[in-house]
Length: 280
Image 1 (spheres, rainbow, N blue to C red):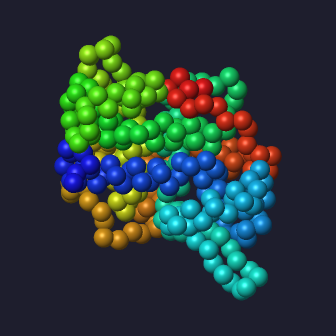
Image 2 (cartoon, helix red, strand yellow):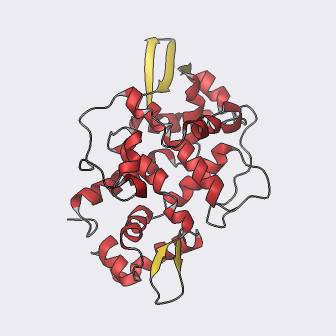
Image 3 (cartoon, rainbow, N blue to C red):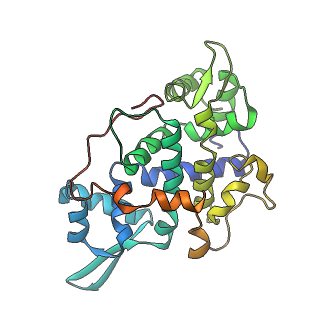
């Protein structure tokens, strides 16, 4: 049974993006992935990097990332075990600067200066709202859409009024706009600006080079035109191609200064602020 009334290829793409977001959005996952960017390390070394997490909190997080295929455990000897990114985990890292760039541009400014990792976490919170990926996809492709029409596409097997709670949340998050009750919905500038983020997540999830994000049939650059080939999984992955940044090299390198992204590694995280359109 189809989850949505979208085409199978589109439904698969949305499901992949949603799954990818589900891997990295849970609390502390991005920080653990960033800590492991320094290279393979023992559990005690990783624990020192994220010292605010107790062992009972860190171990399940690491195991979940291992189960997701983002982290690998290597046993060199019974007393020497290290943890590191898998090739798939390494390939995901260049997606994070796109989230950081989008959050810094579109999310309401905070009362205090936020680290880059906090920008990323706040952006991820908005993207993992229920049905968010499907709703954003439909609004990107169809422009102004009524709530009933959205429901028929996004949740065809549910009562059409069930579309309104997730829609209201996206409006509150300033990703979607409407002029009032009964009026159609459309993407806001910030919702439309998610193209590089969702395109990069789609490319990563499909095993394509991140440079292909601009050719995504929906989230790609308007100037890029349609993709030359169907948007399907590549038969193989290569580390060099998957690590290509989705934005300008200078922007990505600036975003990935370790002191900016993970400056709180030894001091613990600052109090998280609520995420949302006017979320800060």
